[in-house]
Amino acid sequence: MDSDSQAPRLVDVGGLSRALERFAQERDWTQFHSPKNLAMALTGEVGELVEIFQWMSAEESASAGADPRTAQAVRDELADVLVYLVRLADRLGVDLDSAVRDKMQRNALRYPADEVRGSNRKRGP
Amino acid sequence: MDSDSQAPRLVDVGGLSRALERFAQERDWTQFHSPKNLAMALTGEVGELVEIFQWMSAEESASAGADPRTAQAVRDELADVLVYLVRLADRLGVDLDSAVRDKMQRNALRYPADEVRGSNRKRGP
Amino acid sequence: MDSDSQAPRLVDVGGLSRALERFAQERDWTQFHSPKNLAMALTGEVGELVEIFQWMSAEESASAGADPRTAQAVRDELADVLVYLVRLADRLGVDLDSAVRDKMQRNALRYPADEVRGSNRKRGP
Amino acid sequence: MDSDSQAPRLVDVGGLSRALERFAQERDWTQFHSPKNLAMALTGEVGELVEIFQWMSAEESASAGADPRTAQAVRDELADVLVYLVRLADRLGVDLDSAVRDKMQRNALRYPADEVRGSNRKRGP
Image 1: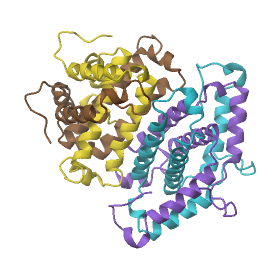
Image 2: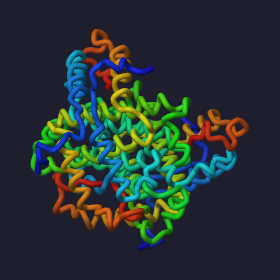
Image 3: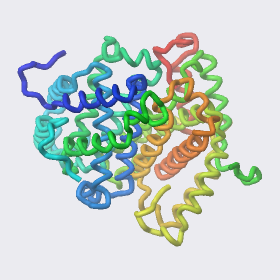
């Protein structure tokens, strides 16, 4: 199940992981950090992120990161989602780099470029 | 607004970012990767992640990453959420490391350890 | 806080509410129906609903209810979301009709037609 | 596919449906009410609902509807989710009562009481 450990890392979230562990320990908040609770917190932050775009057209959404009216909210909500995702992975004992490398390998097999190019029938991720 | 660029990185997602850009280009899928669409895809994956834990107690959720019945689903859904988050940040032109360092600085000021320790009144992130 | 009880009902979910209570009792599932769990189940179903539209344009989404490729999934996911919403409201002791009447009154005050007509600055609900 | 039209209604959302159509027409907001946008708005409101419970235990969540600190937020967020769900169903041309009756019939077949009683292996809805 594990990716070749010699393949280059796709992500390194160690710094954030350690910062979040320290942050929670200093506040005695680890007691609230069950995966169940963290998955709910992640949901709340994804909701806040989605709300930024909900009434925009696809074109308007493309400039939301640069538009001064929304740029800060976009940065903050992306950060909040990442924070809870990294904390959740840690509390579950999952190495995000290993998990995403495995998934990318399977995605390449599942969506061969020749078969799916340009189509919206099979598009993810 | 920007964090001190000499502070150590909290996350490095460059490898995944480049892999996702290449993946989308090979399949001519970038046309579907508006921030609006990617935010919706992120929502779908968070839903799949949350479903793993929905009927579990907090204690059961703590071992979901190790339990052979759920371990693979946990890895896969965490990876899927990360994939869409990184792709979304890229399409919005947001540097996730910069965004999360700014947010962590503000979180430390917003939740001083002395004031919030052990309480569930103010608990985020 | 309560709406005028003589105003006409906006929704009546009593039949579904009773059916869901019976369904849970027959299966001894009420033990799993904490609001926390039901909110997570609701999240999972909203994720499945959103996935139907995630790669569509706004125009394509407008016909998703009629298009034979997606019509059944659209019906099923809307139903699943409603089921968990009604069950959650019941377990919280909330009368959905009363709650929505209060909210509609406040929405009318918050978004006066003269001020917001046609604009995407203030658009919800 | 359709339920027996003589079976009693499980839900009647007609009053809310008409109120929401009127509300949108008065504000010229229907242009923003593609199913895609409404599904995103629904996501945002579910996020706000979930946030109320995210740090609570299952027991604490059971009293969130009565606790004066959370009761109003619980009512408001349940109402907001219902509003977007009903509006989304309307814009998709789906009769929620018909959809939920179909689903309840299939759920009864899929989760026979004798097989699933009391177990958390197959629990939904």
